[in-house]
Image (cartoon, rainbow, N blue to C red; front, side, top):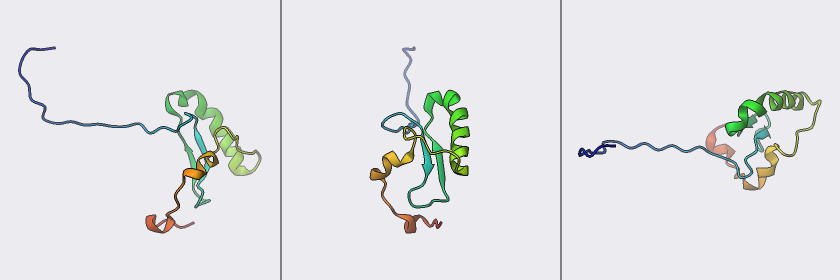
Length: 90
């Protein structure tokens, strides 16, 4: 704290994206099946990521089904398909 005059010379802002239910997001992309998503761990990532990494590896190998609590398909209704605009092909 100071009573001296000052001038703001720069400002920066950041944001931390989050999902509505605050649960991780795992699964394959709805348009590109070769793209897998493993994200959304937030502050609990250090506890969740090791177990979910093992689980997701098993899912990708076809030995387990993806848990519904973390399945990205719970957000498919919000997905807007624009694969030709981003230049990615499967």
